[in-house]
Length: 501
Ligand SMILES: Cc1ncc(COP(=O)(O)O)c(C=O)c1O
Image (cartoon, rainbow, N blue to C red; front, top):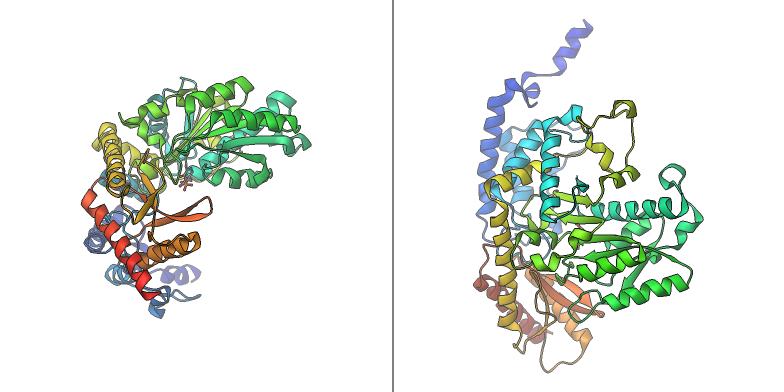
């Protein structure tokens, strides 16, 4: 009797929604229908519908507690189109030039589909088998591109923020162990850690400070080092900052060099910083979240020379290798340093069953359940190829340069820098207006107006307290005419501001 009641709870159509051998035709139907809807997203002529937040609140799409909806695939796709696909930001659109979001490669999407469908969890051998080997192959490949030694190793992470977190953690725990015999993983905080200091340029990504805070060390554990007029860390200033902290009784433990700063795409002088780090016996981390992929180019490889000396490296494939989010890696010069994050759980990877032949990647990660993100990259390297990916990166760099030469002498613009990578920071100027506050207001007006109208998405940032606009170019299909078209929109909107205010 009880069994019958239970059986009645599940109807055939529901049970078919699981991915298994009985549902393969339903799976095919769902995927094919979904592709039709995604095609309409690709055909949109604006990067964004320009709808207001209040336009999204249509009640029929809400899922309320205890509600049981049984939409068909067609009905669900219709709703997702109305709620999401018709409005979400299209990173492949030439008028999207705001943040570090790239258009994605088709092979990478296939990799994602396979990984999501199969649902491999990469953390232990017994959940992933050969998937573990594929992740390791991708790690070995990128370590070799960076010319890291044979002892090097790495792990896929959720992004640059997590990779930078791991770098700071390993640097801290290694220093504490080597110099003070402390085992922070086992015993937790020690007073001397309050004196530990990280150094990075004042243009480094905010995740360095944020991670220091998350590690209980606070923002003040990160010492910002001044940059030169090309937005690169000044090596003399680094030495001065290290010496000053020592005089104050603090303990320098690591320097973070940025290979491609978020706003300016500038590369810190890696060779020189590597030497300074060695001299002071401190950890050398390279945050190559943005610029690390440029190791695949002929144009920028020289800017990464010195990365081979790094103790650790951050690289984001989801920024500059055209991968869907997430796809990122944390690399370390010596695999033994992963001991600071490893944990042996009886139910997953018991210490007594530790076996080099059947690796458990959980021992290198701060995550437990983890997606098989390496498969996307594997598909891309196999089908698109590293050289071609490098050529896409060169293309977006030259686009940024081209744009720079087009607007640098224009009286309507103040351009901050010649692009080293693929960003351009500038601001619209009204020649007869001198007030910075007025220019701040106009530039924010331009950015918001273009976004809200769905015409173009341009980022804004601040330099010396002043508001600037920023183009981040990651779309190799864009042309200089596409970009000049946005420039014209900026001018028109700026002029319009003058007349209506
Ligand atoms: C230089 C740099 N490092 C780290 C990050 C953080 O990366 P993620 O957003 O993948 O966490 C970014 C993001 O823009 C970045 O530009």
